[in-house]
Image 1 (tube, protein in one colour):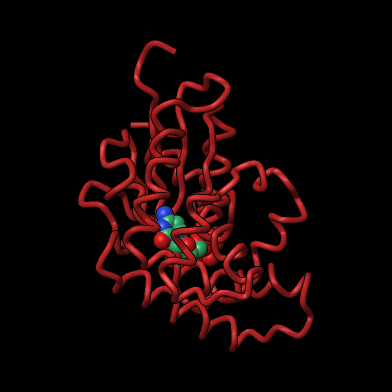
Image 2 (cartoon, rainbow, N blue to C red):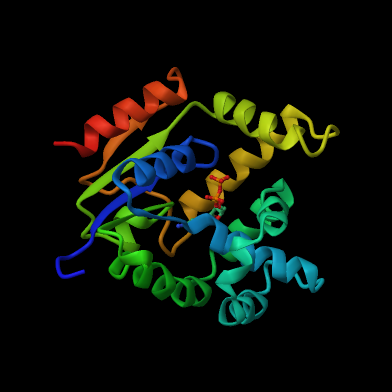
Length: 217
Ligand code: CDP
């Protein structure tokens, strides 16, 4: 790879549809894809498994230093990372500045040198357009109304846990968004040069077509 990789930054709140869009954009352009939330979720999984408190900054930092990216290739682990409890713990850990710094370089390395010699990378998260890759060629901030996002996340979680209630999912999602937006370090925010994409009333196909139009000019 001789020229600079093309970076597409896709940010937005929980269950806004950013992961689906980012994955599809990566497939369309044959770019690498990184779900940065899965890194924070992996730390949370490790911290919870050890019985440590996610609020404990040294537990998060230890997990970040020990992070083994290979675990993200294991479908069983990926499924375990998707629970609401892991999402909440990830958001507590993600508010810790030293832990974020430890994770920042992993993300930038993938953006700077996409695996398999790909010509670009799509990263999704909360701070990709603002902090991780402010130089990204394209930035999209994906939103959707909270009730719609909760319904989508409930559909996803319900398949594995029939006990989970929509009300509970909405409450968790709103408190996580609040914490992610209010934290001092790298809060969730649309970059000034990001395109906003509201997927509330769009099908996956329509949202993808809209995202493609945004990055194609
Ligand atoms: O899939 P969902 O949108 O629910 O969440 P996620 O993208 O897997 O992220 C889980 C948590 O990680 C978020 O609530 C954030 O607190 C944190 N995160 C972050 O702080 N910065 C990122 N770039 C990505 C995720």
